[in-house]
Length: 274
Image 1 (cartoon, rainbow, N blue to C red):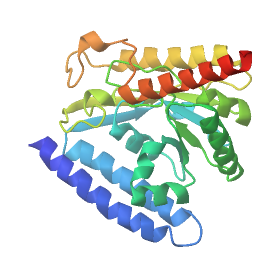
Image 2 (spheres, helix red, strand yellow):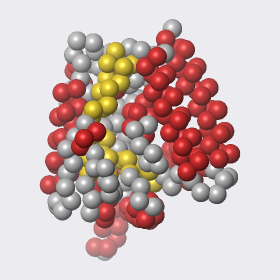
Image 3 (cartoon, rainbow, N blue to C red):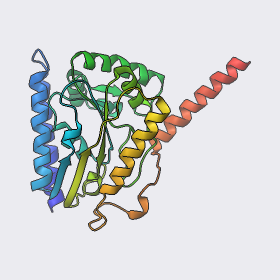
Image 4 (spheres, rainbow, N blue to C red):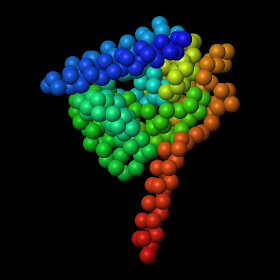
């Protein structure tokens, strides 16, 4: 019953705020719409706690630099973790997959927010698009949230980490704050059923600029995945299947795009050899 009430609340409030944000997007400047988005995410966090019974704790604020550019690199297990992280900052920019642009209202809001919208499976075009939009965001002095896996993960599992986070880190030469997460136990991916209980989102010690790609990617993945596993509540499993802990997965969309990309690259190489 709590899941049903929360889902009605979620979709109703989302629709209302989508309309409000589209109207605010017509106003010159971005701040009015971003303020509305922050109120929306805070209302979602309230609903998660009061209606769904999901008690989210956010820790590690002392690890987030108070000034200057930073990149937040977060574990992504749930629609809800984006709400929680966004609610902690004002005028936060974010990297998101192009699947959201299928909805006209959301596409309009993303454009006004200067969200960095990319093909979540990567590639040269995604790298170029990320560089162009992120440069604008950097000039605006804003912080960036990115989910390095590029996809929602089944709680306990992980996807292969994408290199886009390193390109941002290398371009900006700023700290990256790893963000661990156990919210998927209570609201797994986009599942209808919610599971009451505690969950934690934790900002960890920043990774200083200047590391090479392989070293940085290994350290980032190790920190996020290790701490996210430590945060899992094995006494109140919720959506977690203990057998999934540590499993590396790849969804159908990512697999199809990866195979297509690899096939195209192989054909180019064969054509060049000929």
